[in-house]
Amino acid sequence: MPQPPSPDEATYLALADSMADGGFSVWHDVYDPAPVEVHRTHGYPAFLLAVRSISGSRHFLGLVQGVLYLFALWLVVRWLRGLENGVFLSNLFLLLMVAQIQLLRYVGQVFPETLMVLFLTAYALSLSGGAHLGRDRWLLMVLLAASYWVRPITMLLPAFVLVGDLLLQPKSQRWHSARGHVMVAIGFVLLGPLPFALWNWKNHGYFRPHPLTGSAVISNLGIWQLRLPGYGTVHYFQYNTFGRELIPWVDEEEASHHFDRYQAQWERIEQRAAPAMTPEDRERVPVMMEHPTLWATRSPGYTRALDDAIRKENVSMIKAEPWYYLATRMYTAVRLWVTNVNLPMEEVVYRPSPGIYPRVGKPAGSIGWIKVLTPCAITFITFGVGLPFIVLSIFRDRRRWYERRYLLMVIAYVWLIHVPMLIQSRYTVPVHVLAVLCLTLAIADRQGTRSHPGAVT
Image (tube, rainbow, N blue to C red):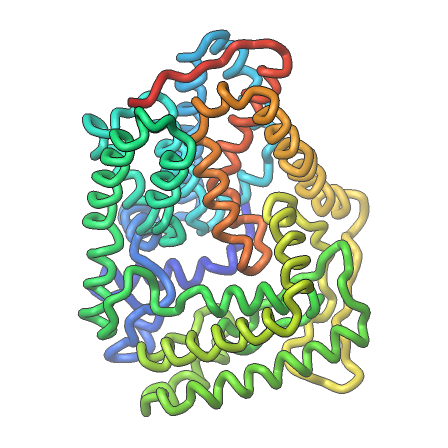
């Protein structure tokens, strides 16, 4: 179905076009030489480049991503058919998936979530379906590396799975399994983080297995988000908005006061990082920051200096208000699964203006309200209610869920790694299919249907 452009579309397409010319920059057609990208990895732009080499149509991209999404569903159905009462389980899974219309948004847009759904679903099913950590380790390595190149947030997933098995497996199996996990992790590093770290070293002078931007700025947005409803920022990622939660945390006057504090914090951050600016930064960054869709690309040293300054401010805020921070992270943990009721904003405030406050509007008619409420209702029922139901099922039959632990590990990792960050429901989209699969199994368990996966060796 037709979808509006995603907020990340311009940067991803610019990177894909730059890769076609042998570079990797969103500014490849503006500056010569263009500043090399510091925010993203190459995976999804390379995918876009391959798709656009066949057709530049957005509809064609949606078709390709739709096929990949259906392939992920087919993998789950195939896995379920291998269990007892597999036909019932697969039909129940597909019935639950029909309601997940929020996933179709990502299929039709320039977002990497569809690829991540496929890679993480295939990885979890490969482990849960009897993938041999010796014989089939190359499959696991490739799936992990592919997910890393698309979204490097999965960099610690192999270690998370390894530690999980060390804690959960019987001693007689623990070390044999650990050796297999370590071999997969080594292969993953050789295929993913190490090559990217070398690329960073060559292009930026820093040996880092993740983009130079780091996660500090996203965590900073997350700390401020609930105190700045309806406001936006022109710092770092320009014209980014904080959103407006259905459940308010502050009133209008408090939000205005926090916005002044936010501006003051960014004055401190920019002052601390300013000595690292190059002449190119001083000339280009102010111009880049006025672009409506492309993010500013700073020099490597300035990028790292900003990241360090932001991280120090984050630590100071957490130390000053630890209970507030804990409360916001608990709220974030829920909201990562449940889509907000996103009312249209009539005015977003990006810069301090005395007497000017954000204005929220109302959806246009009954159709507008349906569009706003439906994603919230679906995700609340599926995940807001479904995930606690899965947890209860685990406590009822720990032995059965031990056999499915890899499904749970992948879901838990993607969930927990995003809790310190900005609230974005799409962060958990890569494991929505796996979560619905676990809900299917939990419902079947409640009904007394046997559903034991094959053993992992």
